[in-house]
Image 1: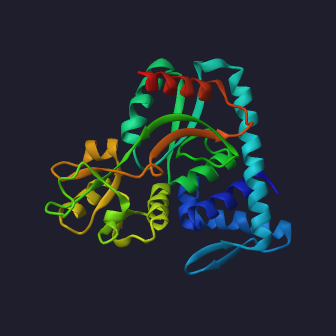
Image 2: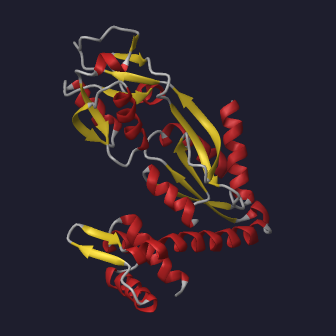
Image 3: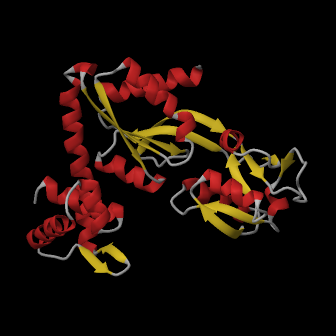
Length: 292
C-alpha cells in the first residue's frame, strides 16, 4: 500500500463518498474508486460498504483508516520539518477554519500574516468541527479553529471567548429583557445550526441539562438565513454575542444567563506534534491580535 491509496480512502470517508473525494483530490471518480479498490485488494478485505446512502467503513476499514490518519500526519510532519529548515521565506501553512465566526476572527489575521510573511502560501480549509479534527489527525492541516473544550489529543491556544445571546422575533414574550435563562425558552421553537456545528450540540446539551430538548423549527448553517427565520417569527436563535452584533440587526436580543454555555474559540493542533515555523508564526500573530 502507498500514501496515495491511503489518502484516497481517508478522503472518501471524510467527504462521505467517491464523488466529493474526487473533487477534493482533483481526480476523477473512477480513478479514486480504482485506487481504493487496489488498496482493498492488497489488504485482502473489503474496507468500505457501498450503498445508495453513501459509504461506511467495515471493521477492517476502521483499522486501516485509523492507521492511515497517523501515517499521513507523520508524512506531513516530516515535510514540515524539512520546510522549516528553509525559514519563512517560502513554504506553505495549512489551516483549518470553522464555518462560524471565521470572517470576524480569522480574516484580519489572514491579511496580517500575508503582509508579514508574503513568501508563505496560506492554504485554508473550511469544514465543520469533526471534519477539521480529522484533518488535523491526518496532517491535512497543522492548525485548526475549534471550540473549547478540546479533546485531550489536542493542544490549544485561546482566540476569543464570547457569551451567548438569545435572538428573538419582534413581539416575543421575552423581548425587552436584558438577560434570559434557558428555562424561560423551553416553550419556544429554536432555529438550530446544521449537525456539523459543534455549537449546535452544546446548545442542545445545555437545554437537556435544564430538563428539556429544544423544539426544532429549522436548521441552517448561514447566520443571515437564521436571522431571517427569526425575523419571520419561526423561532429563537442562540448565537455568540460577537456574531449576533455583526450580522443581526433590528431584532430583540438578550444575554443568555447560562454560565456553562459560552463560545470559546481556540486554535488547536495535535498534542506533541512538530509545529513548523510558519505555524508558530501564525500562533504568535494570533496572540498579538488577541492582546490588541
